[in-house]
Image 1 (tube, rainbow, N blue to C red):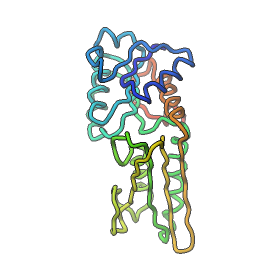
Image 2 (cartoon, rainbow, N blue to C red):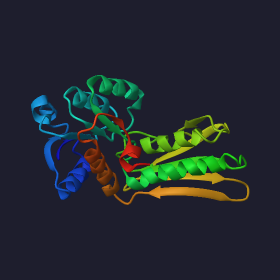
Image 3 (tube, rainbow, N blue to C red):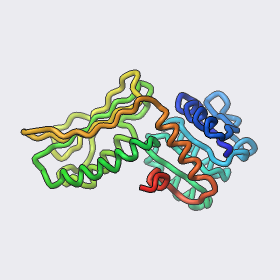
Image 4 (cartoon, rainbow, N blue to C red):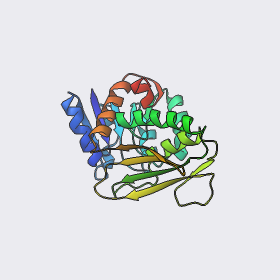
Length: 238
């Protein structure tokens, strides 16, 4: 498979390493220094594009891939206020778009655990729930996309919580997300249920970027030759 990397930072380099190990080819690498090379001629060589940049450029990169007819796997977070627009454009173009807030297989299993625990805990309102997420200092958005996904899963089940907030709150209906930026920290997410008698915690800790990069390559393999809008649940059959 021929892959275009849109974004060639630490994550892009980790994806490149795993893709090459699996026998794929990297036919295009785009970063801030060669953005002019992101054009029809160059990206037409790719079967799939993998986009990992930042919240300010992700939407335009996704739309450009779709416009140029290349399936795109997007791992950038912080831009989902324009998600519906991207979905509509993908459908109009008869294209292929796969988005996940986190491509780690472990994190996606953690998502399923989180949903199940929230369903159980909704029957026990004596427990309050708070979240914490820790990432490296270069992480541009807070809370992270992964933390938002976890929070929205909790809000779908815990009826006493009505919205998430990224700050301390005295409103019992708020789901607090505490965001910390500490180096080096690929990512730790904690969901903690607390009562007067005990605590229950579920935690996912990434040791490195390999899990995220490997999942992104797996997603690209899944997306090749497909049409439509997908997520990691489709890739993993969850």
